[in-house]
Image (cartoon, rainbow, N blue to C red; front, side, top):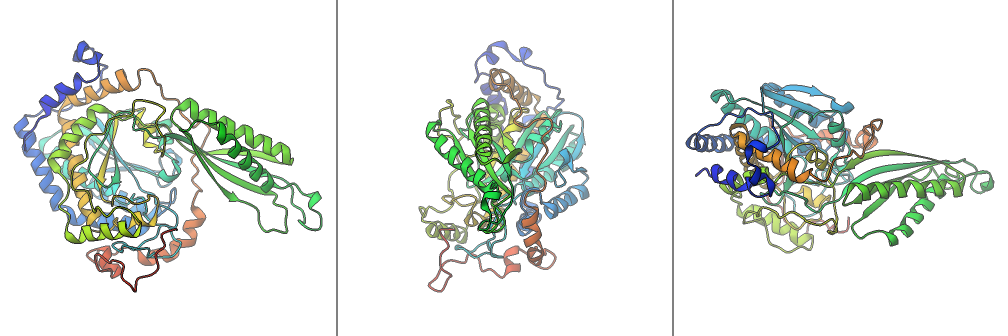
Length: 551
């Protein structure tokens, strides 16, 4: 392996205008004290990291499978957080539980001195996404239960694998710096990262690497074209009455919800094409013969910039107020989550990309490809199998008029600390996302290999960051001179908003007793596939259950 960091850094310093002309002396200061080592030594340490991570494959597999088996929804990741922090505590990390007032949120710190590097990933799962791993058609472990249909069971195990391998080297080589691991709680509700930022948990952090499951190994920088979002629940209160005997005595809160939804849907005609807005009625009353005294609707308002998101938010409140006035009901509203549109660091992305090239994609087996093509066929996607070539460094979006799309609250971190997201190949291309099909690979050799590959790329990049101070200087320069030069972060959550920690509690109370019967037992079974008695891969045959494609 040939280290190219000298030429890489020279290149990225000159890649964003004035910084190259000003020179390093003019860059914004960064409080770091990374220890510089020789190129030959760095090569040897990176080789050692990859070897160590390969030797950790069994523990990596156990972590991935264990978190998969917990299958916990946002704000209710009790078993997941207890398990992961237990591993970190046993390996010398100092744990702080309940950060930002969120019971399942935590930080795990190890090391001393600067730089402070944060490493995060999400841990929550998807409603009704329970699925047997390694089975290429719909076959839930528990019908109707939540499951890891987003693949969030794999990211923190990746981070722990990388951190433990790097920790050994840092201890032996006396490399200064502090690692901070943290979880994205309730990412599916975009419910926590803005609160982490608001409450100061990234105040002293020099850079952040976030990891997220994907179907290839790669990263990106700049504006990725996604939307920011604010999540708001509107509660209406009226007066109950007998719906047949005296409906004129009641004031229907459900009528208010329906009128708000009607008003918003007419409003869509006059909105820009980049907007995405959607809602669910979370409370529509109790039974038809009682005029509903209470009803609630939950909205996601998405757009490409902070001002446009706030305009949607204000329009939503205005329409809700009008609906309440028309139905003579009372309306209150509550922010349940938020996310800015993301922007990621060019310097860190370029360094990560070079390490990704060194790692390469896993060697997929014939069985891995059979599973991938089997579920692709089931879902009506092109039967291309698993990725065979590394993805290139993504080119940023240069306009706010892109097609819009999804949101991720890692974006709030990215506007406060130089940040990148490492996507790792633990899932299958061509699947719907937020779906039981996306859980199929997540406790199989596909996920285990993808996490190992991602851990190598992350550990090598962290080593670069801890040993080459020019990298963090370049990252800070891009953050200051390019990303935040004209755009300043304004939180979408207020000082008085609180995390919606009661979300999903009733669902988990319903399903957890049965789900506990299927928690992974690594002391008895080598893999979760073995525990469930699944032959890998299991493909559709004439006797397989009918497809649940439309679910």
